[in-house]
Picture 1 (cartoon, helix red, strand yellow):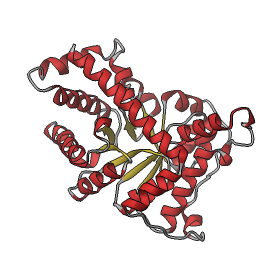
Picture 2 (tube, one colour):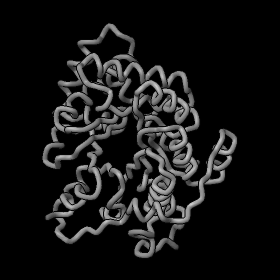
Picture 3 (cartoon, rainbow, N blue to C red):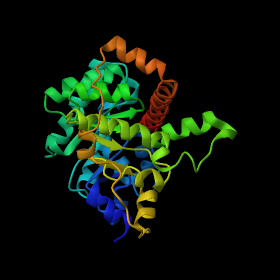
Length: 314
C-alpha cells in the first residue's frame, strides 16, 4: 500500500487545487481553493470556457457578484468529483471587515444552495484576523460552516476554537519558509525536518491543545513544502495537499506511522488559555512570524483577487 493510501487510513486527505480535472486520480474526500489557485486555473486553456460562459451568463451583474459566480462555479465542478466538502474563499480585501465578510459569505452560500448544494458540503474560507474570526462565529451560529485560513499562531487557533469554528487551516509551509529565511546561513535543514520542522511543531501544538480540551474545531494542516512535513503530521484531522505532493506520496511504499494521536493528547498536561480581543491582538503582535505571514498572505491573496477581477472585467 502506498503512502497516500496509508495516510487516508489515518487522516482525511483534501486536495489543495482549483484544477478539478486533476482530482479524480487522487480520490480525496474534500477540496480547497483560494484566489491564487482559481487565478492559476482560469489562465489554463482547460478552464477558459468555464470562465467565459460564467461571465457571459452574469454580465449584467456587478463585478463582485460575477466573481462569486465564478468561484462557486469552480466549487460546483469540484463537488462533482469529491464526495465531501469544498472550501470557497471570501475576498481577502474584506479581511478586516466583519460585516462585509458575513455578507459575502451569505451570498456565496446562497449561490451554492440555489444550485442544489447543501450547507454541509461547503466551507467558507476566511482569513484568521480578529474580525474574520468574529464574522465566522456569527456565520457558524447561522449554520454556515467556516474554514479559517492564513493561520500561523497558537492565539489564532485558540480564538477559533473558542468561537466554535468548524475547521482551521494552519499553514505549515509558510511557517517553515519564515524560519528558514530568518535563520539564513545558520539554517540546518536536517535538524529542522520532520517533527522538528517549525510548521509541523505549530500544528502539533494546536492539535494536542484541541484534543486535550475537547475542542471540536477540525485541524487541517495546509501549505506543505515537502512530503516530510506531511508524514510528520499523519493522524491530523485533515491535511490539504497539492497534486504534486499527492503524486509523490502515491509513489512511496514505505510504512507510514501515526504521528499525531488524539488519545495521547487527551492525557497530556496542557493548560487551558483564553483570549479577548486585546489579548489576541497583543499575542499576535508578539509573534513576529505570524504577524508578518498573516499580513503577507492577505496582501498576496488580495493581489490575485484583483487580477481575477481584471480578467473578468476584460
